[in-house]
Image: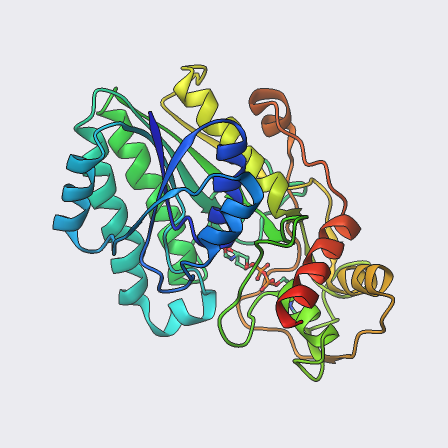
Length: 338
Ligand code: WQD
């Protein structure tokens, strides 16, 4: 049996491939290399000693997707990461996001629905909650109107999978709602490789620490939080990757109670922007150059996960602290710039 990882050359995808291989799964990656480099395969092979199979396919090409599943009849599980994921870009290019994130999901599900049995893990996001009313956020918190087409594609993706599973008993799915992924593999062989100016906080911090950026702009210190800066749940990417393997196992072994389930994947702890900066300063021994600027449009004040369901049902719990995750991000930044 093979496991297909779409977007498997990407940040979370590549770390998940490593954990799948560590668990003995045979992996085939589909990636269109629009936001990742084939060299990531070398990093994965260096870590695990096994080079995953790789197919450079754009999932928007329906005929190519059909052909892939004809050639790989033994794919029974799919972890679907492939998608565009820049919140700001999605606002100015909505159709690119709906075509790339939704059209491709439909083609994938059509092929999987033909199989006698298929398990799908869907890369979703806490962004579906918008600004949740209560903290910590549970899976039963209401899904709110998305603030961006990117966030909308995650909500729609969940609904499309739910509707399909309802009428396809052979198809079982789990959506994992990530909080804020960060860090890099401890081997420093794979990590986050943002293209251009990083949108996310942690890579911007480590690039500033390396002198690639002059200073970090802190988007607002007038939020109703303890230190005025926005609070998020920063989850170490290796912890997050392990959650995917456990979710896949749950489906393959038929342990799921419904044929569509949702889990929040976070640490359960909130950290403010200033606390993340202080974490960087502790692990690097460097002072970070930053300035406070007005809030970024679309940002929410606070989000951190209630991880009870993942802990008790999935048997997963994050193991690494913010400082350990930040140390891995800093080690990685120094390595790729050396
Ligand atoms: C975190 C905090 C910013 C950059 C988004 C998506 C989510 C997922 C992760 C893809 C916020 C502040 C940031 C900077 C700053 N995306 N910040 N200066 O917005 O919580 O989540 O990325 O999978 O779906 O919604 O993450 O890292 O952009 O921001 O002050 O230069 O850091 O305002 O409070 P976010 P982020």
